[in-house]
Amino acid sequence: MKIILETDRLYLRELNIQDSEDFYNLNLNPNVIRYTGNSAFKNIEEAKQFLLNYQDYELNGFGRWAVIEKENEEFLGWCGLKYDKGNNETDIGFRFFEEKWNKGYATESAKACVEYGFEKLNLKTIIGRAMKNNIASIKVLEKIGLQFVNEFDFDESNIILIYKIENNKAFR
Image (cartoon, rainbow, N blue to C red; front, side):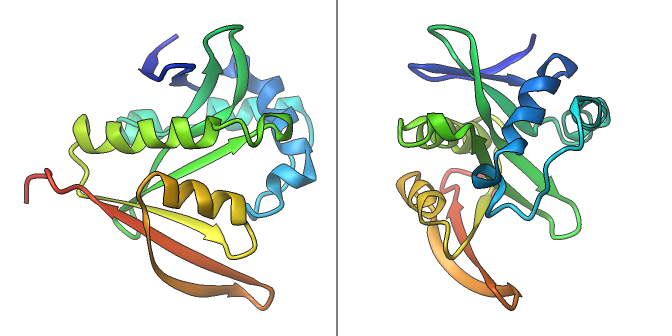
């Protein structure tokens, strides 16, 4: 188990195939994936295959990480950075079980990920995207210091807001 970073209540570690059932269950809840554009996995095996094929750690040295509560070792969801080679940008993302919402876990883990991206990875910019109706995620992005940049129409019913934060200490 490779722990990437820790906060007061949480540690973030690389995802692995032992997370298959939790990963499957996380995406089962339509409220959890409502604003993601993702669909639920068909079964635990499909979640396992996703995790087996997840290559962001090898390709980029970082990715989405399991968020674990220190007190009881509970898998709460995931949070982390994702590099998009096509757009040459890194984004912050997070997803938690619904019963863990409104407890500060998204803000706590996302803030730690942004700090890690700037301090350990020397990233210059981190972006965040949220559907305009996803008020909770927008609030998290704003709490961790990202600022609104622009919006675009994903489709007729979904407007995506783009947020960004710059690393003032990055080597230029």
